[in-house]
Length: 115
Length: 110
Picture (tube, rainbow over the protein chains, first blue to last red):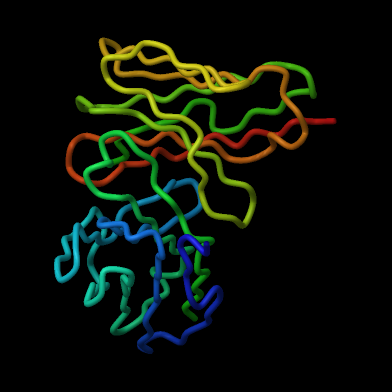
């Protein structure tokens, strides 16, 4: 059982380039999340999805887009990367209704550097 | 601004000692969770405490919750070098997503 898998694990971009981070979970979870982690800032929510075909903005959504075309996948896109988007990105999932009682399952992170 | 703030930001103790870290939050919650993150890894869930609970235990972990003070504490007893990690509190405010604090970095010296 792979759990939550993020690809790629590392990426270096130049300012203005675009890229997509892929998150895949094999636990049939309804809810999926993208967080970013910066030094001293903890995790901040970028976007999330409560089901296939639905997405919603989190705390820091600007500069990012997301899609949830399949229940098991949650994609995070950067259309025009900026140095401020240098960060470690984490995907997480949870069964859904269990959010009030259960735990988030995290991927191992994707480290993105924008030059 | 962060919903949860951990205190202290960093903590260094000797193996065998107890480690206590605190979390304060701002709005009412459904539950509060604690996560651990080893360096360069993803977060792993440790324990969840519901808003109507005051204390919960799991192995060497003890969590307390004081909703009147909007605060929680995580106690790790008889710490081990393997407990070295960052610890985060996260609050569920019913908005379908958890809000994380900035974390406490724990260093356990062997």
